Length: 158
Image 1 (cartoon, rainbow, N blue to C red):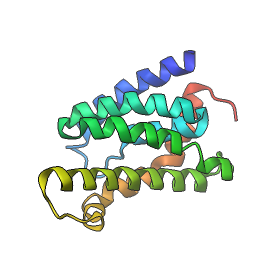
Image 2 (image 1 turned 135 degrees about the vertical axis):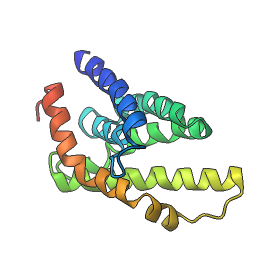
Image 3 (image 1 turned 30 degrees about the horizontal axis):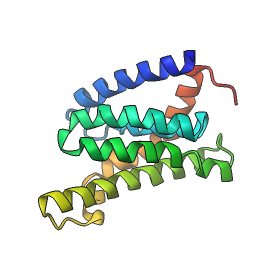
Image 4 (image 1 turned 30 degrees about the vertical axis):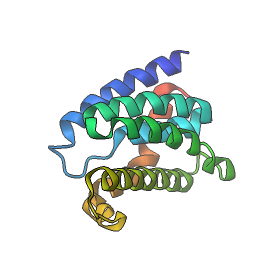
């Protein structure tokens, strides 16, 4: 219970940090996505999905156009991020990087399809990935370090 309380507190801090710093720092990682993937990997699919729902709501509040999509996609990311590390050792940084990259591509693909349908754009996923490549690369590369920090902060045992 105490772990979840700290995790949700960190989520609020992360939402504020992402809202303030993402426009100022070009290579700022997607901290909210990292927390959802972390929860899925280390606390399981059910906790990942419930945490993803709350995180999706907060992230959707940052961009009201995608609020409904974020509420749907982040629980799926939290639940699915618990599956890949089951095949591999979840403490392995390579498994963490692959899981984070898969989750990031899922979110980008869902947002691209949604915005293409609602606004009539013909933007392709490769173009969107190229536009957000710096943030995407930073999110994926930072994931093992962020997960190690979160494990230490939440005092999770391996």
